[in-house]
Length: 316
Image (cartoon, rainbow, N blue to C red):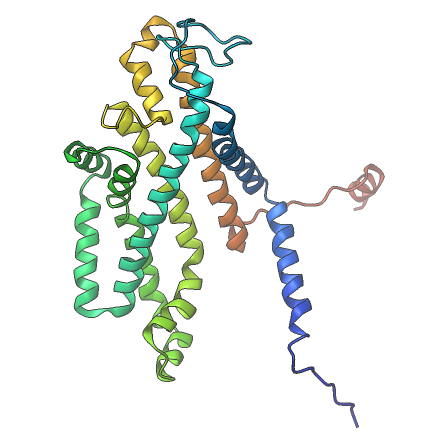
């Protein structure tokens, strides 16, 4: 007679399984070059925005050295009125990241509420929310942001965040609605409904975790759009000059004709920072796609020693 195996009731057997799964996910994350590169780039700017302004005084302080190229005293050169470009770039990092992260979070939250909520409820609620999403999607986003920002008198930090967030949620909501329409008719969701589970629990436990990769991806792209949108608004002069961001630095450089006068050090650093931060966020998105979707992973054959590889090639 076979011996009966006993399983502890305290769930201790599941702990090694969970830890092994977490270890495998960590190994996969460390093996993704795109994810590591993106995290390093974004992490550098986060540290720069959090710690950098603490070591810099007034970045708008006017100096005596005007339109000076990069040197040991001024790493990124100076502006037309003697302001240090390096100090302005470092201080502008914090506000740029705050606008990108906050606007991305708000836009993602709105898209989740409208997309998943409408897709799960169905009926007239879904039709109404889908119509709202389609109308917002038809209107070009950047011109809409420009028009709304032009009518807002106070273009400080919070108004800029809400203007960008409330005009950039429609595409994400449409994607989430389509995914929710597919998930809500699956067996585990129907079983939860048959058991009398409340709607909020079905959405949070059964539907939302399955759409988490899409939500993270949409947040990263919303953050990229928010950073580029704020830079565009500032470049057009639709931002408060008191708000020091990378876009405002570009605006003042363009307004002072830095390109035609050859002061490339005035507009090159903030432009490169915007490009590098956008590239870092995109690399994180691509890396997470490979990590969460096994079909996108690229298999790399492990390297063999020279003697073993030669024997394998000679083997018929």
